[in-house]
Length: 104
Image (tube, rainbow, N blue to C red; front, side, top):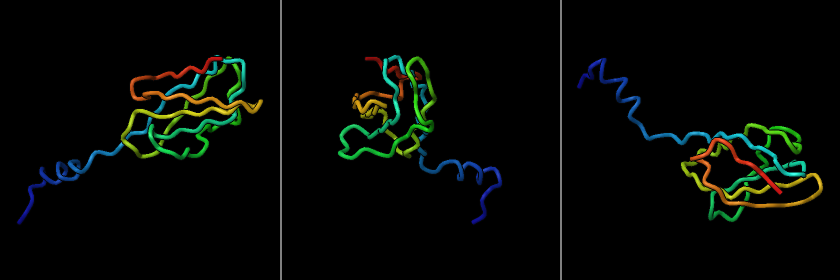
């Protein structure tokens, strides 16, 4: 069977949908310096690797964050570690937001 040249691109593009990276701006509106950030899809027991691509996010600053885990989910557990050794966690739907703000 011969395929029409117009049909070949359509077949190549009709594969399974790939998950997109989640990209958002992390705003540190707290009084603590964030030095690590971990994410995990809600319901998972283990945290992933530290996803910050900078050494720290000082108070009053913001950084772009990318979750490139290849998953097609929106709800994540977020864990923040501060320079002082503090530890805070929050569950958030990240698909519907462009900015996530950390406060005290």
